[in-house]
Length: 255
Image (tube, rainbow, N blue to C red; front, side):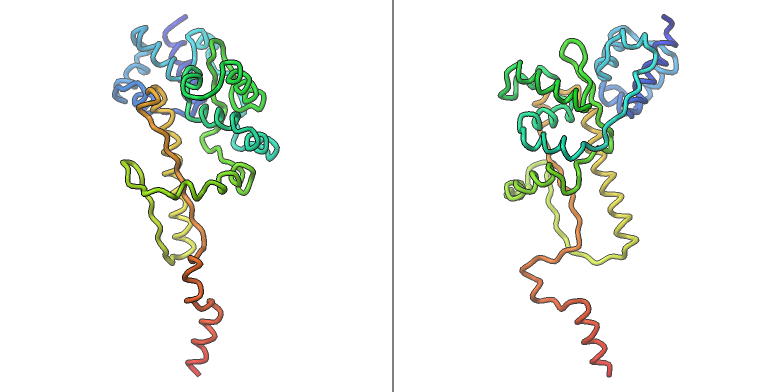
């Protein structure tokens, strides 16, 4: 097999996963120019090729196929599938783990699951289409970059039941932040700021892939909550006139 064939296949696998040279470089701990030179020359050591394949969760033999098998990435589960995850906490936990690209060996080490349970749960996620199981206890995540839980669906309802536990915290540790502000801005600015927040949320999700080669103790769990809504705290509502009442009063004062 020619080197050009191999690297064309690697490019196809990068594209299939929505990954850039920069993300691959960060994942391998080398510079982006180095990665670009490797792909431009279609040349690198066997050790480096193994590292690239490990990062992409593929084996060298997968490159012979030239292009990865086309598959539909999941952008959202069905209501029934979310109900199944919400009702089965072990299945939900494993789903969260695969979304963070945990190796199966780490699931067995860090979760209170037997090997049989873990295998069964992974196979169920494979049946749902959440992952694609591979030989040697490997898997491929089949979740799209813009995956989201159903708004108001079973998982979101479940999360709301633990919101008090989430916010009962000082948010002072490194990397933590809690900001609550009340503002009035135009609808156009509102949409623009919302888009920026969504991009930031996606950056967190993209970083999961970049850091996936690190051991679990070097990437502690983070939960990100970004929420924006039209709202005035209940303890302040009695001090505010309704918008319509305020306009009526303003009109009366002018007459």
